[in-house]
Amino acid sequence: MDLGYSDEDEAFRAEIRGWLEEHLAGDFAALKGLGGPGKDHEAIEERLAWNRHLAEHGWTGVGWPKEHGGRGLTLWQQVIFHEEYARANAPARVNHLGEELLGPTLMAFGTKEQQERFLPKILAVEELWAQGYSEPGAGSDLANVQTKARLDNSEWVLDGQKVWTSNAHFSQWLFVIARSEPGSERHRGLSFLLVPIDQEGVDVRPIEQLTGGSEFNEVFFTQARTAADLVVGEPGDGWRVAMALLGFERGVSVLAQVVGFARELRTVVDVARDNGALDDPVLRDRLASLDVELEVLRWQALRGLSADGGADDDGAASVFKLAWANWHKRLGEVAMEVRGLDGLVAAESTADAPYVLDDLQRLFLFSRSDTIYGGSDEIQRNILAERVLGLPREPKGASQK
Ligand SMILES: Cc1cc2nc3c(=O)[nH]c(=O)nc-3n(C[C@H](O)[C@H](O)[C@H](O)COP(=O)(O)OP(=O)(O)OC[C@H]3O[C@@H](n4cnc5c(N)ncnc54)[C@H](O)[C@@H]3O)c2cc1C
Image 1 (spheres, rainbow, N blue to C red):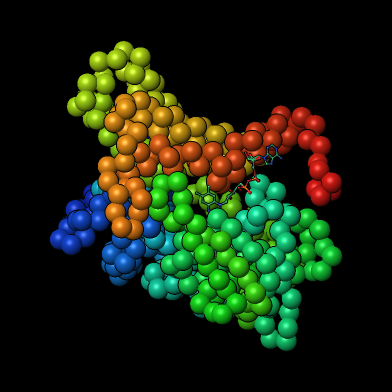
Image 2: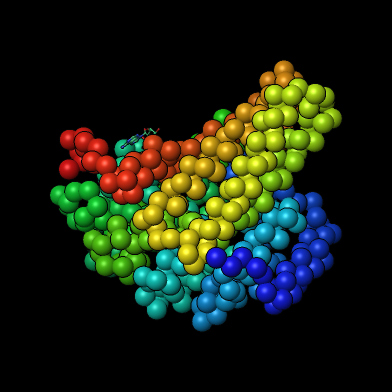
């Protein structure tokens, strides 16, 4: 595979680097490093303003085709954009779910009306989206979705409950999978619906996390309504749309994740240098191992993106998820070792929060969830065992026929 960047790509790198230097300044400079996993509740309004600033200058939907209002960058230019964005420590974007997941799904499955109605507002960061997939009884086993949707003249009416719905408390819309054919089972009879949040039938209740913040929510539907034409794909064929959306999750932004990890590792090393923890040869060894493994992760990510990275069913996506999630979890553990006993105590408490964590404490606690979301470790191993190694399928429970 050829990973050499062309002169044109390097010119693009200089352009985006220069733009970020010039614009991530003044009031926006204070936003550096804010947001992202474990911190997505931070400075929402200010980050929204920054995101709209990006939009005004054409830096949202950079990989979207021009016909849908995007910048139409090549794959490697998108990689460069995300690398430079992460390198500049720019704040995490607030509409990741709309831009990276729903947008491409609407381009692939949406009607022209749906595309015209929703895509411009995603690009302009005027409407934010949340993902209503998981339910109390449907997480890893997503086909067990119980939320019901029925057509009532010109509207869908929804009843049921979603859970772990990230960012729903500051979003305007949800994309939801719901059972629209009574008596249907598993992946049959589901529909993929676009549901406005600001209505009486939708109750969003934030869940307080271990890290002290509330990034995700329970969402209750009680006769919630959405227009009949806001179904993506055919009614009853929502599973296909829902799975295609998950495929977009493994996009080019994984490279940005690796750049972010490198920054976190550097912070841990700096703290270890300052507090003397680096004198411990075992800890030095673990930090060096993390550095080496991170380089392997970077190449794995590049391989996944390159043309000969292999089709999905070669298991590369599952191997990568297992690798980065466990690397990051170990980084959190090493960070706490570096902090020593001091790391056990929260720096402060406020009227709003019983404890306020510093970056390394938050890294440790939030990274516990890395091996759960986006498909848990066990589920990734099941995929590798069954689809790649061809081992016998695991016995299903009574509800999983
Ligand atoms: C930070 C975070 C953000 C999230 N954001 C969203 C969101 O925005 N929208 C959304 O819809 N969901 C979201 N989720 C939910 C996430 O997708 C689920 O947590 C995940 O799919 C696991 O489902 P579950 O929590 O119901 O656990 P379960 O599926 O109940 O699993 C519990 C345990 O059993 C194991 N297990 C389950 N089935 C098997 C099996 N067949 N074989 C072996 N082991 C098994 C799992 O690996 C896990 O260890 C988020 C989760 C987290 C942690």
